Image 1 (cartoon, rainbow, N blue to C red):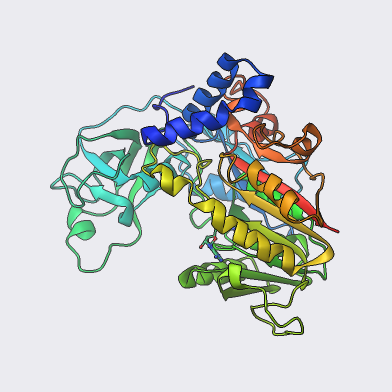
Image 2: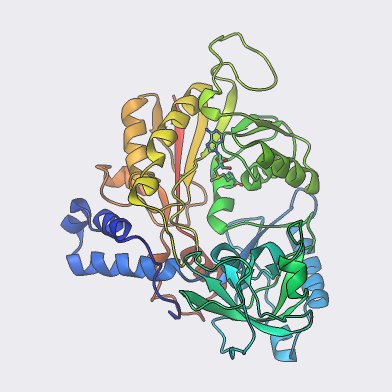
Length: 462
Ligand SMILES: C[S@@+](CC[C@H](N)C(=O)[O-])C[C@H]1O[C@@H](n2cnc3c(N)ncnc32)[C@H](O)[C@@H]1O
């Protein structure tokens, strides 16, 4: 059900995306109306959250069934269920094809009455609330003048980032995301020298109800979008191998790779941003994974010019790794929910050259016979199928490989790839299922079609 407006984009970006989804190859295959309808559904579903929450279970530490049971117990304890009906509706389901995934349905949109006291939060915070989070103090930009801890407030998301920090009200573009109880008074949020920490508003009536995983079984469950979990399995790491994760922070996929390997072998995690490296290390420690070695490094420079270079850290000699994951920095247009994106077309289109530089390094660092997985969380052709066409052209040693599991759709027309090549690609396209998907459809089926927008390609180096 659509309750929010479509994602708001700069007109030049909307036009660009429209030209992508209505490209000449698409229009030769389907009629214009159908292509337009797909594009409009995309804009609508991007502003809505998926209808389930996906968590990855630490099956390197415990069985899925045991984790599922513990999670159920924790959620019952931590949530103050308002009625026995809601408790009964707590479902935690395994995924039929992915052995370390648990799915929890999201209940929403629910009829929630707006109140007089209003708190305004940044768009990122608002999106997190729609996926089950409480409001953390740094996300609050406006609150009533005399707000005190204990006040029941309505929470609004400031879509365009136009609300002045510390304002007492805001009438700009905003959407209602639910009601909660303030845990801090206004002064503790805005009148301090140091930025406030901790929960600012505990959500009690969110528009979309989903458990908050804050502090729940941190060693055993990890919040991760379904396509991101698929990436780790598609890479197919085996115990004892040496794997490179080139763009790794905050380390969700790095940790998954190490877990799939039973923590046997070595997972080298690189990221260009120094303070993000701590997040990778913290996550690895929390999940009891010792095979991860994280380094702050620009992966475009990760190939050593000395072929005999044998250092433990970067740069590395060519052909040092059994498998390489390039989960590339991208325009992120597949993220959900995302109600407004203020980027210019120039910014949206700025990633292709960097992705290609990273790809060059990835191919050099991979052993012959090794596997390279390229992924993004965006929907453009330029960062997905066009990159695949370019890579196949530029590196004759690469061939596309089938993916396991393959639960998304195939690649999109428009980059000159053959039907066989498109078939080998995995594009998660929530717009394809947007209005066919009954919310009563069985959850695992719904989950496969109601994801963030995402793209995966798997190559073998011959
Ligand atoms: C899509 S995010 C990675 C998410 C991560 N793989 C995960 O699953 O948690 C892309 C990351 O690439 C990093 N990055 C961007 N340019 C880079 C470069 N030249 N070398 C290494 N990392 C880079 C960014 O800092 C960002 O953390």
